[in-house]
Every structure is written in structure tokens, then in C-alpha cells.
Length: 106
Picture: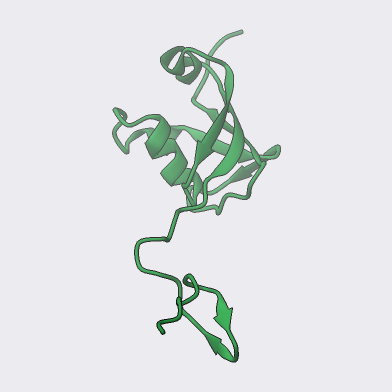
């Protein structure tokens, strides 16, 4: 009589079965993103909660501003939890992220 095999990742007796192919999912994290200056105008909001699988600030910016070319990175500054960070900074769930373009005024 055939026995059913446990689902991937489960154990059966002393054997551990690997996860089944195709069951892998990408973990999305949630961020509070703040936009300043022209970036707020382009997004239509000064802040929003974003769910993303992006691992770095650069990847998140790329998702949010798909139409922007990479030259924006020379002038836009990235901030995580009130600290300026490099574009390759890794993101953590629940972080507050801000993108600051150059501004003028008086």
C-alpha cells in the first residue's frame, strides 16, 4: 500500500525532505518611504508605505522610479532612519526611507 510522502521541508521519521521545486516565494518587506521636492511631485505623494522585495536602497529606488535614468543617483541622497546611506545599503523590514533630491530656496 503506497504511503504519502510529506510535503517539501517536512520530516518523516529520520529523513528530511528538501522543499519542493516551485514553492519558493520572495519575502517582501514593508517600508515607510518619504519623498521630497520633485520626487514627491512625481510620485503624487510625500510619503507612502511600500511593500517590496528590494534588498538595497538602489533596487527600491529603481522600482519606485522606473522611468528615471541612473543619473539621478548622482544627485539624489538616500536616508534610512535619519542617516544618510550609500546606494548599496541593505534594507531592513520596517525601515523609514527618504529620497532627497537637490533643493533650492531661501
